[in-house]
Amino acid sequence: MIKQLFRRSLINQPQLFTFSEYFKERDKAEIFEYYNNKFTDKRYIMYTQKWKNDLEKKAKRRARHQELERQRTPPVAQECKFIVHDQMKGIELPSLLKFAVCKIGSSQYKVVKDDQIITEYMEGLDINTTIELDQVLMVGAKDYTVLGRPFVENAKVLATVEQQTLSDKELVYKKKRRKRYQKSQGHRQKITILRVNEVVHDVNDQLLNRAVALI
Image (cartoon, rainbow, N blue to C red; front, top):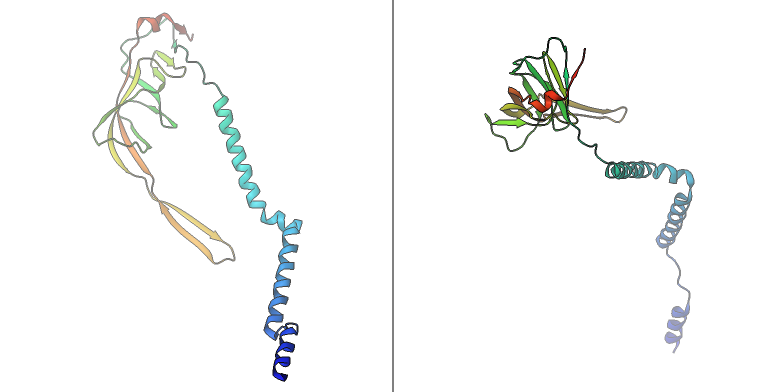
């Protein structure tokens, strides 16, 4: 009977914390209070969200530019402009000395015969393959100049693929002061080397009828 009463009294007693459990509960309370104050501190939020705000601004700016590009209407193609340098002298056809300004990718190149062009990598081209560059923006000769709006009609540049290679190595060096951080890295870009064979441009009667004298 006495043993049963003793057991009941132990069961009914409130649960007491041991030494380690007390400090665990206290640490939990301190951590909770620390995180609660940290996430409500305006200065902490400003510094932690700064990089996120920059990324959001960049994303909005990129979306705005894409929307403007979609809304922009492309320019209407017009007839190319044929300019005669000297009306009294006239022009000599066919003209052997000609240059052209052609567009390859996102770059423009002024080329003449036997020129070498180093362009961005063009896939699917074998060495010694002859290609036609039909995006010609301008053709010039000794006696006349043809301006394309945007491209010159009946004009093209014939070129041969000489090499599909890599550019010279460029070193990229990064360093952070007082952080014991430095990194050196090399980079070689894929490039295509072309040799210009000929600048082809046919001057027909329609183009001559639209001729404009410079002098």
